[in-house]
Image (cartoon, rainbow, N blue to C red; front, top):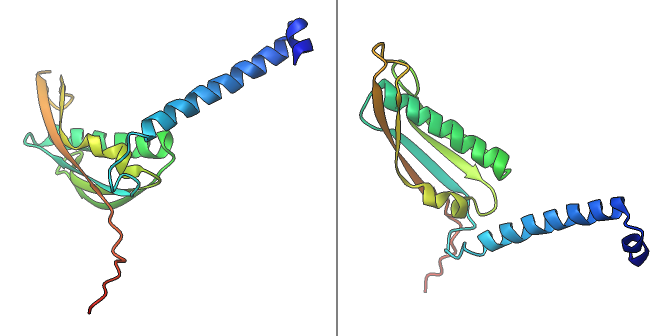
Length: 153
C-alpha cells in the first residue's frame, strides 16, 4: 500500500475511492434504518390509495401514485409488490387500489407516506387547458403475523 501511495498509483486511488463511496452509502443506509424503532417497522405492509373528489383527474392521479410507489418499492428498495385489489376508474386511472409491499423494513420505509397527496397541473383532459387540483389519500398499515400462541389456563 505504501508503495502504491509513493508511486501515485491511479488504479489504487480509484479502487480506494470506489470502496469509500460504497462505505458512505452503507453508513447512510444504516443511519436511516436506525430510525426504525417502531414495533412493526420490520414488517411487510399494505399501501392503500383512494382517489379524491374530481373524477377523471383524481383517478389519473391515484394511478400515478400507484405506479410511483410500485416502482419505488421494486427499484429503490428491491421489495416485492403484489396488487391485492384494484378498482379501475370510469375513463382513465383508478378509483382505489391496495398493494402489498414485501421486504425487510417495508412498513418502516413506507409509513410516513400516509396522508392526502395533492397534484396541481394543467389537465390533459380539459380542452380549455385549465389548471386542476387533484387529491388522493394514501394509507399504510403493517402486515401483522397472525400466528399468536394462546395459552388457556
